Length: 309
View 1 (cartoon, rainbow, N blue to C red):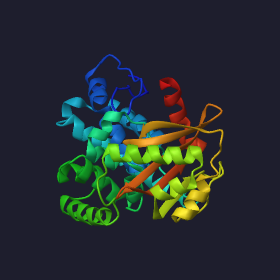
View 2: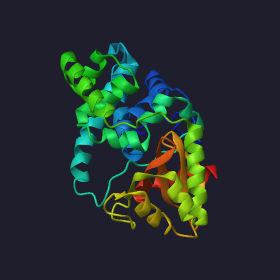
View 3: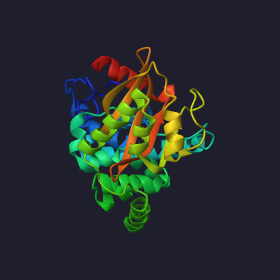
View 4: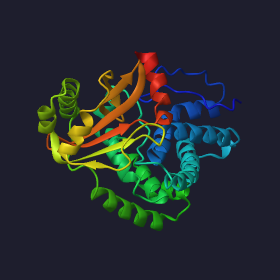
């Protein structure tokens, strides 16, 4: 049995290919691969780490006696959750020394993901940043319960807690997220229109037009990871953010894309992905801008958009 987890097509797989189901274990993994990837990504905020978790899950799954497994989906989710929790605790320690703001790795998604409002919101930059404020166990419980609607007993097995404790954790996490999540659901069309206006304003250098679409208390976060130039602290206020945006490299091309379930912009310099910009919209204005510049977080985007361009 291969040490590499088999691929499966889906909303996150661009140009993916299926492999023959040579045995029941492979077939089960292929069927649930997209679910497992999404669970791991929402817990970790990193597609690269999610892929590593899937690798670990596959290796463990390959050694399981399938005759003893009552529910293959639940068993696979349990393995993935446990491996993601281990990695999340390690990553948490690393992020304490991260240079500047930390943002999730941008994930190229198919346009139809936006039609599933709950899934699109759960992988949005804004929501992933909210999930970052939860403890690892709270994050796992919230994702499994609120996003994937798993039963409490299934979640309990995944996080190593009893069902009563999981119910308490879920309630606490739900209240925490509710106080911080985006205020209103915004349609893809609203986001697309705001992004189009934003793109035009940046490309033309029309500072007044920028100010018209930026909320007075907008927050701009840029993640360079110490490897690319980026503000080391959040930039707050329409005037300050507009000033920063006016200094965007004039040679950069801005391309529309679907990132983390929502319309976004990919900035290219000399043909290579330089920055991925996603937005948060509230009441028709841009209230949050998230610019990922760390090249380590853009390598997957570079590969996938190069293939699809």
